[in-house]
Length: 436
Image: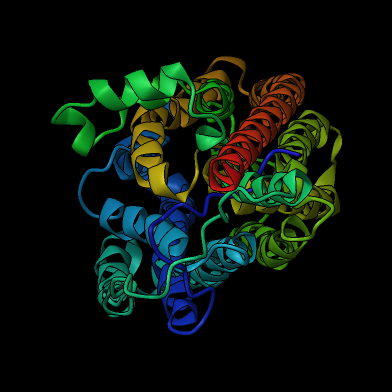
């Protein structure tokens, strides 16, 4: 069976201890990074009226913030990128659970900011509210102070024992070692050796060999399509409710309902993803979550009245939370913790395009048709198609990994048997010389 996570880090991750303080810091950093751009949608209608702009134009506010964060720019990017990377240095076996808990910060902060923003707007207007929100986000400096580097002087994991006379024991040890390697490090093939020789100065900072990694390309292709419809339904949830004649506080409360469900499902998803039944095939779990989101958006126009929107917010919160909890865990599962920092950097830079364009394009559909249902149909298609793509391609990828793993075990067994035979011949030769 192909491995679930990488362990060839050169040290033993503590899987706890100060790592839980790091998770708490990541919880706060990730929470404000994702929740802040979404919570600003409370002000969209008023800003739109103040500047006399269209739906597509006002959508640029959140999309630019999210895209700059994904592209690794300033501001929220300094919150997000370190928080995503450092968890993989502290956790190995409990990593899905740790990632799930850290990603829970987004709905927790959003459920608080959504009603708070409405109160701030009523009290101070949107300009005064932005000043107060800026001072609140400044507290992320405290969360960053918790993210100290991991102690890499811990005792390394024992390596596989040398070949002995019992080839079966050696095969079992080789299988155990192979089960704990990253999918990118399963085979020391000729291609991997060429990659190592071709790495130059650029590869010290960005691992461009990832563009020849099968699992990484599957993840990147599906995510680029998915992100065109990932954030827009959240951005337009409150404006959609106001468009339907629902009052401001009830519309803001929809975001709180969405966030509360999201908050519950993220740690649950982390626990499920950490089980022995799901983790070896966690990519299927992610594929299901993406497809489920698409179905929710396609069915959203059928919801009528405030009760219907509440039901949609609950089911959407479930799907959004599952995808968010697994989004970076499945990437680490594919490329390994050692290459994760480069992988997440490349992915977020490329994904900033659809993150930037998704909400404005969705807003343009609202401007053209004067109806939100076409926007939700489009987002549903952009989510459902990648979900199906992930199911098909990860089935192929797992099949190939199984074949490669069996081949590697066979090669190691043959090598061990040849070593044993050679040793026996040398022993026999030595015995004959002694008798002579």
